[in-house]
Amino acid sequence: MIKREKYLEKIRPFYDVDLIKVITGIRRSGKSVILRQIIDELKDKGIADNQIIYINFEYADYINIMEAKAFNDYVENKLISDKKYYLFFDEIQNVDKWERIINSFKAKHGDKVSIFITGSNSDLLSGELATHIAGRYVSFNIFPFTFKEVCELKKIENKDKYSLEKEFNDFVILGGMPQRFILNTEEEVRVYLADVYNSIVIKDIVERFKIKDLDLFNKILTYIVTTPSQTFSAESLSNYLLSDNIEVSKATIYNYLEYMCRALLINKCDRYDVRGKRILNGKYKYYLTDLGLGQVINNERKKQMGAYMENIVYNELISRGYNVRVGTFDTGEIDFIATRFDEKKYFQVAYHLTDDIVEREFGVYDNIPDNYPKYVISNDTLDFSQNGIIHQNIIDWLLED
Image 1 (cartoon, helix red, strand yellow):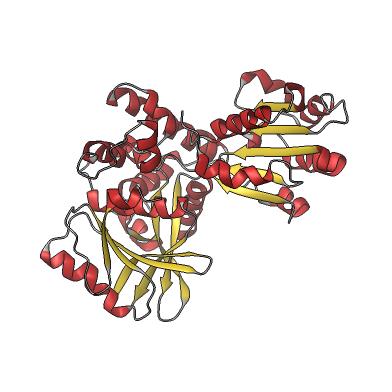
Image 2 (cartoon, rainbow, N blue to C red):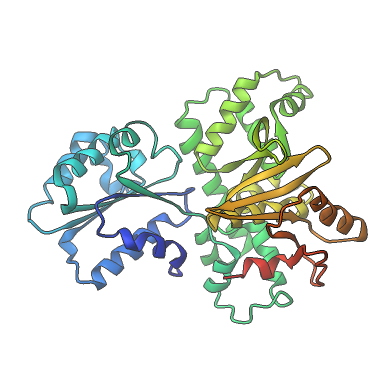
C-alpha cells in the first residue's frame, strides 16, 4: 500500500500538539492504514511500543471493552508512567458513550496523551464531543484513492493521457476503494465492492438510524446511486415513487438522504445563485463518494460517462480541499464553483466536446464577468482553449501536482 502523503503531511504537524486528531471517511477508504503509517513514523522517531495504544473497534478482540467504563478502565490501566502516550482509537463510533471517555482522557491527562480517533460517519464532531472539546480538535477527511494515487500505487511512470486510458476507464467504473487494488479479477472486485456497500447500508444507515421501511429506503437509495450528478428535488423523487404507487412525504425523503450523507456514501452539493449570491434551498446535486459503489446496483444499466466524469471532478476538488457548489443563474448553470481561502475557480465538465457542446460549455461563461480562472474539463486530447477559458484533458488535470 502506498504512503498517503497528501494526508500525512497535513496530520504530521499535530502529532505532538495538544489537540484531538479526528479522522473521518467512508468505510474502507484507508483510515486504518493512515493510523498505522502514523504509528510507524512515531516509532521511527524513537517512540517505544509501550507508549502507543492502538485499538480497532472493528476487531472482535475488543468486543469486551465497547461499553464506556470497560473502555475507560482498559486504557487507564495502560497509562502507567510519566511518559507521553499516543492513543489510537479506530472506528470509535462502535463504543457506547465514547465521547465522554475521550473527553475524560483529554481532561485528565492533558498533553501527556496525544489522541487520534477515526470513524465512518460524519457525526464524530456532533453532539457531546463537539460541545466539550470545541476549539480543541483538528479534523481530517480521508477519501478513496484519487486517480493520481492509483497511478502511484501501480507504479505507472509514464503518466501520459494516451497510455493511461485503460487505467482511467477502470477507475471510472470501479472507483478507488484502496483494498480493491489487491484483488486480481473484476469479478473479485465487484464482490468486494458489494460487501463494502452492504456494510455501509446495513451498519452505518439501516441499523444506526433504525430504518423500518427497507423497501422504500432501497428505492430511494437506488434512485440516487443510479442517477449521479443530477439536479435533485424531493418533488422529482416523490413523482418517481408515485409511478410505483408509493406515496412518501418530503420529510421522509430528506431524512433518508441525510442518513446517506452522514454515512459518507454520498455528498450533497449546494446550488448557489451566482447573481443573488445566496444558497438555493430545495434542489441539490448528490455525488457518490466512490463510483465503484454505484456499480454494485448499476451493473445492468447504461453507463453514464458524462455523469461519471462530473462525479470524478467533484470528488477530486473536494479531496484537494475546495468548497464546491453548483452555480446557477437565469439562463444556465455552472457545473462547479470551487473556492479555497481567497482562491476561486469555475469548472464545466463534459465527456466529449462536439461542436454544439463546445458552444454550450464555453458559452456558459459569458454569464460570468469576473476574472477568476475558468476551466472546461473533458476526455478530449485536443486543446479547445479559447477566449481565456482553459480546456484540459481530465487525465492531465487529475495528475496535476
